[in-house]
Image (tube, rainbow, N blue to C red):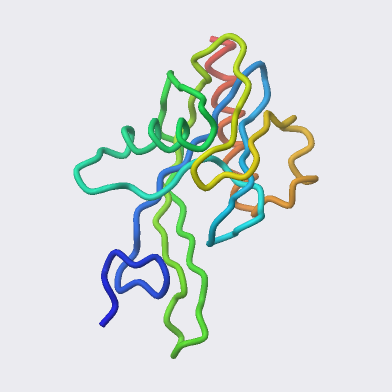
Length: 154
């Protein structure tokens, strides 16, 4: 029997939390070291732990993967990530991703990869296509960028 907490071939969706983190008009990206999407660029984030709020998950995951502390956290969007498996049409992975927008708390924030991130960078939001990001990730970053620009112009 599959454990409901298993990430591979789960019996129910898992909750993942991600952050579009900004610093000096650049966005924080990590290169994943583990599945799903191992080796690919992504937003920092990860699975919610039992007893943890989604905001606590975001703060913990961003720090574990990049050593960046965040503030000005705002809800952004909910995204479904379903990767079909080969076994009887059951999903190999199924995450409900809760994305937030945030700012780096430090003035000079240099990301340091850790946990399951093998690289972490501040990326130019005008060059996102060069990182091979999932199309939905680019959409979420653009949405965050628009909300941020509107907030800063108020």
